[in-house]
Length: 336
Image 1: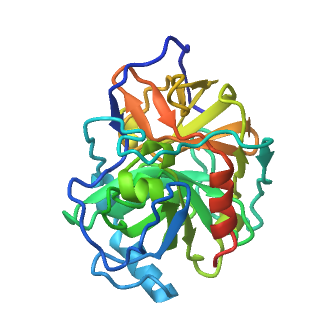
Image 2 (image 1 turned 180 degrees about the vertical axis):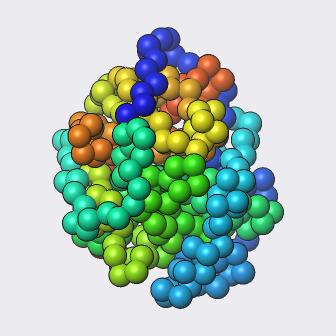
């Protein structure tokens, strides 16, 4: 595993850059459910292609996969808006530990891979996300990881990799490519079937709630976690934990190779309950997993955060995972 190790220093500067994408225009959408004012509740939506057609069948999923040519994947870009917004619009609630720490179990793959062998060790359960933003029709990229659940079809990523936020709409042509490397898709592509994210993100683009879970279509009858294995989920952990952060930062190998960063997290500030680590992962790493108990031999661990932002001094930040994230998992994990 290629490691980027950084010493933790003092609390970072307050200005932050969003890693993946936040739409510049809040577009009304017919496929957006009515959002609740409670930021900790979630909304789900069926996935759509760029022309608005539901991705609700294997043929529709194949159409999304065919859209993502090697050239389109290489040209997909992240966009960086100006600042980090936490509770900026007065949601009145942010995540916090409200019970004992818990975890769900990771899972090993059950289907033997016929893909290529990479030249460095990478996690099969982590990959890249590609999507089209409806407002401008351009293609963008994030990171994500497979999350073990009853469905064996789920991915976890950042909310801004799924929904524009601030009352906008859901991304389209959404697909997940596990262990992407230099245009290669050794384990296939898995188109989204259904998204879920927090109302705190949908309504207010509040980075406390910048988390999403996505149910993917099986590929040729094979479910994602059975192909790649899947991480577990962790919640209510200490804000100071040893983690391995995985993703595809554009400032490392142009985002074409999976990178990792190892270190100990810390709380952002007394008034900001998110966690941070000085990895200096740039655009494209949004949604990549922050893994507790990462096992180098299996490439799996428990996701206790996802990359959300980066400050000008290189501090990556993640929402804090509490019972609300576990509730999202419970709501989406069995969806097929």
